[in-house]
Amino acid sequence: MRKSESAVSRCKTISTVQKLLGGKYKIELLWYIGKCDIRRFGQLRRQIGEITESSLTKQLRELETDGFILRHDFCEVPPRVEYTLTELGESFLSVLDCMKAWGDENLPT
Image (tube, rainbow, N blue to C red):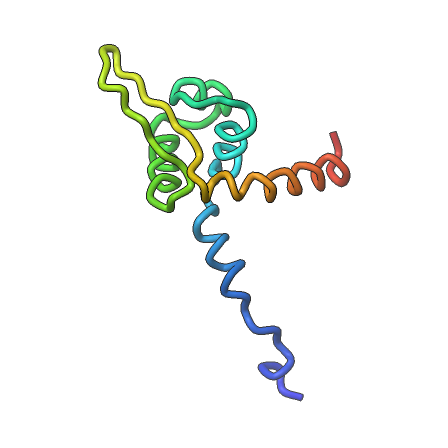
């Protein structure tokens, strides 16, 4: 059997999910917004710690563009912006729960 015949074909669904959530902090951002009720830009930045402001902005914009979060601008001075999960983002919480449970069970603490 030739090598190409024995190879498993690429899973398009997994590939697409990887592209959508492949950012360094995207999964963590979804966790904090959905599970920890951390909704404001400054709170998210402090929670993650090592993320730069530009990287956080980029990751949040991509999550918004991909339909996982909504950005609420309150048009106040000083500026106040909050993020919430969309229905799509809410539907991903069960996946995050499974990932956390697996990590708690299999990764060293």
